[in-house]
Length: 182
Image (cartoon, rainbow, N blue to C red):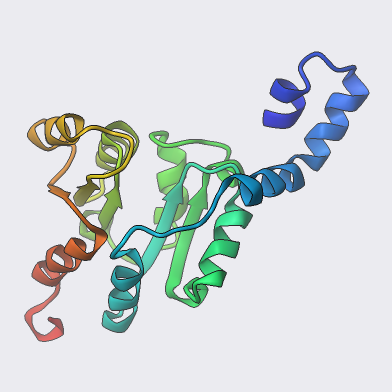
């Protein structure tokens, strides 16, 4: 839709169709050129800690190219540490839409009430995760949402924690793991 219906809106139908066919490759090229991947401080440490503890890490992302995200994960040596993932360009639904959460949750062999979800947007991540029935929602400061929006999500029940760093999620997870696994 992005390429054929939005970018190519004023083009003749055959050209719009060609843009639709080439859409995934065009999105990947755009993703590669607009993103200078720099993980948040603490994110890689969190993923590695989870891997060492046997905690499955999945991804639910609004992105123009899931393929591009997977390339970035590969550059950091994280590909094998990532489980079920749902990217909006591939699922066809953006957060807070339920289908994108369902796509990732379908790949887990655990109850959604036991899932800890980490995001940085009150509506997309907080409300979307809560509507999907996810048990624990952690929102991170430092994204596009203001601290006030994040705190309102916490006060309104759309988040269980508002944290400064992905590394702080380790403490949340440690408290939830069985005593012998801590």
